[in-house]
Amino acid sequence: MTSYNQAIFEFAQAGLAALEERASKANIIKTPAAESHFLCSWMATALKERRFSKLIAKDLTQWIRDGRSLGAGAQLTSLLTRIDNQYRAAMSNQQLGLSLERFLSELKAKDWIVILDAEVSTKLKLDSHGEYSLVISIKQYEGHIKDNNVVKPITLYVRANEQELAQVAAKHEILLSQGNKKASLIKHHKAYQIFPNNEQPALALLLD
Image (cartoon, rainbow, N blue to C red; front, side, top):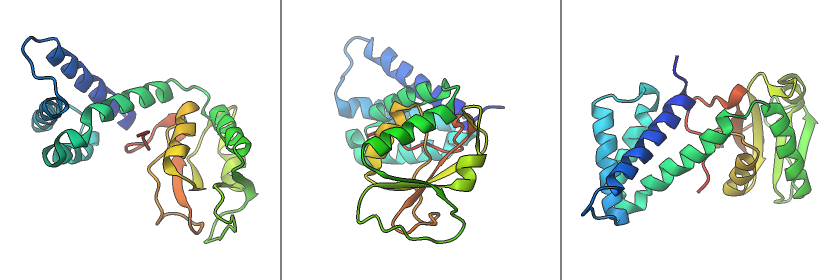
C-alpha cells in the first residue's frame, strides 16, 4: 500500500523530471512565470487523469489554485525541490529515535528551554519569558522510543520561529507535521508530531 511519503516524493520527482524535459527543448521560454504556468498545467492534468495517489489530491488542488492566482509567486518549482530534498533524506533515516536525541541536544546547545520530564495531559502554561522552548510529555519521551527508533507518535510542543525549527529538524533528517496551535496543550506553543519511520500522514513542515 502506498504511503503519503511515497506518494508525495514520487509526485515531486515526476514534476522535476517534467521540468527538466521541458528545459531540454529548444525555443522554450524559461522565465519563472512561464515555468510556473507549465507546472500548474502539468499538475492540473495529473489531477484530472489521476496519475498520482489520491492521498495527495488535496495538496495538488491547493497548489493548482496557488499557481493560477499567484503565477511565479506560487514558487511551485521551489516547492517540488524542497519536497524532493527533505523527503529523500528523511525516508532513508533508519534511526529516527537517535536523530531526535541529536535534534534535542542541538536545541539545548542553542539555549532553548527543553523539558522532557513533565507529564502533559491537560492544559499547561510554561513561563519561558519569550525564550524558545520545546516540551515533550515524559510518558511519550520514555515510552515511544525504543532501540534508537520512534515506535509510536511523539508530540512536540514548541514556541519558536517555525523556520528555525524546520532547519534543525531537516538537518537531522526528521519530518515534523505542520504546527497546530489549536491542538496544543501548552499555552503559546504549537503542537508538532513525529511519526514512526518519518511516515507523516500529510505534508510535513517544509523549509522555505
